[in-house]
Length: 114
Image (cartoon, rainbow, N blue to C red; front, side, top):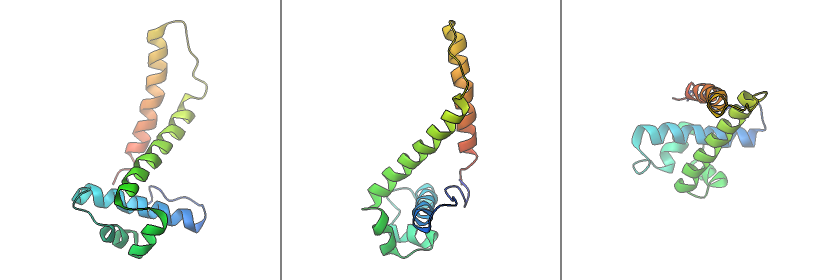
């Protein structure tokens, strides 16, 4: 994901939580989950350490939130790709019709990696 991966034109509160998620992804990828600290994440997110606790209970909650947010993004992309896909009588053709749009959605999300 790049530095703007989770950035949106939403209220500042959501923007800050997304900055924290993005920073956590970077830190966890670089140092590993167990070697990372909330202080590391706060530094990269450019927020006070205590600010993270306003949004997340602890480091585990932060990790779970990363997964949930990533899945939400994937589902949104998949739904966009699957609009207009019809189910045919041929199971193989249907599988291919479903696979290709989902693969395109994944590729777009992979382009957001750090």
